[in-house]
Length: 139
Image (cartoon, rainbow, N blue to C red; front, side):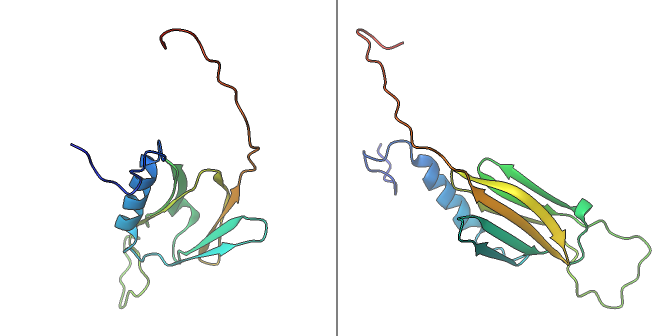
């Protein structure tokens, strides 16, 4: 049975991972917490700024997992506090961004309630590789 996919062209070999990335992105697009900005710079680098008011450095983590930037936040509940009103969100979150090939996280900093993550494009030199043609069956 043939499955029709977005990248089903016989000229697009090995791009099935892009289709999975698009599906993963569509599933997480409805989540709006925490709010964030993405800035682009002239040198091709990017900066993501997430509004994480109330989170300390120890309650945040920034990781790269399977070509995704994953930002997690989990606040520790302060025992003994009685709130008359609690308008500042104190919930855990997971925010992920799919990274293109050649994009890497270079730095992260927490300042004034904003977690800023800097991304840069690795400079990749184009290469040509000659493949040796052997006589007989392939290994």
